[in-house]
Length: 212
Image (cartoon, rainbow, N blue to C red; front, top):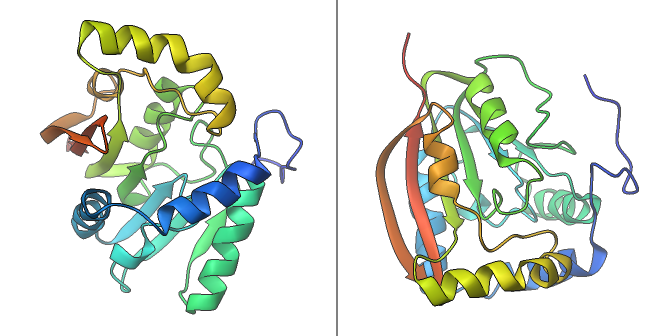
């Protein structure tokens, strides 16, 4: 098991101001954003791991009967999530951990849920390898992510703003080819939808781990 991290640990980048901004933003999301969270939350069942649960924005859309575990590397996000959980009376297991180094046994989850998180992990390829490791055979990753635009001009713009955007948006990178990364992880994408939400190109869907 990994040692307990601190906010100053280089592997656990923490952003006090961005955590406050994100807390506000998730309370003022558009109907489309809320619909994507509701759809994703309705797809998971059994024992569920959420990667980068932030301040707990998906919780209103998750069944109370889930055996839920959430991880978050940012100490300030985690602090806000714990306060939210305590205020709601919801029973949750929340841990400070990175998607690239999950402190869980092999094949221990039915579903992994990730929304607007694979844009911030330091190494999405390693993170998805860890997802595959902890999923049970025939288990699935449920995802909602913004991705690199497909237009020539917009792609160049996303590439150009990445360094500054990453600094002000908690490490988010707006030009990741997340669909390709998921497909290359060995998980089989099922029914992925591409759409624009608030002007951002988004993907949502499910990727299943093969049964033995």
